[in-house]
Structure formats: structure tokens, C-alpha cells
Image 1 (cartoon, rainbow, N blue to C red):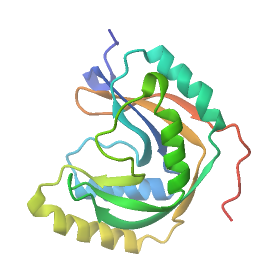
Image 2 (cartoon, rainbow, N blue to C red):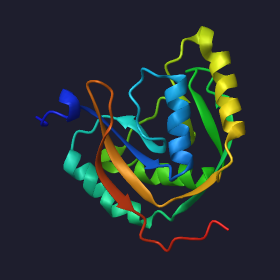
Image 3 (cartoon, one colour):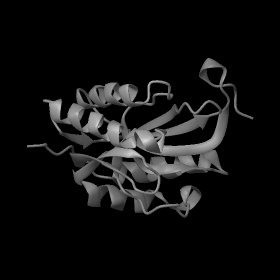
Length: 189
């Protein structure tokens, strides 16, 4: 049994691997996400490398990540446009560069104690909203597109650190462990 989580919520058997977005783009997306879904639990803006999954052997899963993540090169990620997944109505920012490296990392890490057949093909992205009623999707997309067009900061970032997270009964994700790439960090220029 896991100890109670923060704010009285209890951990559940749902784990994911993410790379958090750096400043200033991470905070900017956090603000946009809060505007689109003011009542949703807010996790830091991120790109998911391993979507949520149950884990039967937590220690083995953590060791698996510790063994493999240092070999994942820092990934240069360029952000694209605001779009919507048609089946789930999730509003997200596409990734225009770094996609192949993220997919390779996903394939490498989706193995051993973290192996899972995904419900959807892995598509790297930055989620902005995922619980908006269908009748409000078009307006929410327009708001997100306007906010993203207004952003004047860098739209490229380097993913060098990856965080293993666990969900809770109130859908708040808790950081368990962060692991950095041990390869030399390449310049974004």
C-alpha cells in the first residue's frame, strides 16, 4: 500500500514518463491550460514519453528507466500548431521537430516492466485541454490558437530530463523520480 498522496489524495496504479517544458514556454502553456480548463487539476506542461499505464513491479520499472534513460540523447523539440485529436477531442500543440527522436525513445522505454500495448499510436504532443465538452471545442481551439499566436518566446526546447510520475485518486500527478540524459547536451542553435 502506498502512503497517502499530497492533499489527501491516494496514489493509484497509473504511471507515466514525461519531460517537463522549460521556462518560459512551460509557464505560458500552464496559463493557457488554466484558461481553457479552469477547474481541471493542473499538471505542469510536458511532453509524455510513456502514456499512463499500470505497473506491477514498481522497483523494476524504476530500475528499467534508470538503466535506459541515460542513453537517450537530449532531444531538440520544435513546437508547431494548435490542433485537435479527432477521436478524443484533446486540444494540443503539435511537435514539428524531434518527433522521430521522441518516438525512438518511446519504443526503447515501452519495454520490460513498462511494456504496454498503447490504445493509440504514440504521437508526441503538448496537451492543452482534454475535458472540454464537444460543443465548446471549436471556441477553445480558437482561444488556444490566439494565445499561441501571441506568444513571443522561444518555441524550441531541449528535453534533457525525464520524470516518472504517478496519478492519484483526484487525478493529480506526483513526481516520483527524475532522470537526466548522460549524453552531452547539444546546442539548440
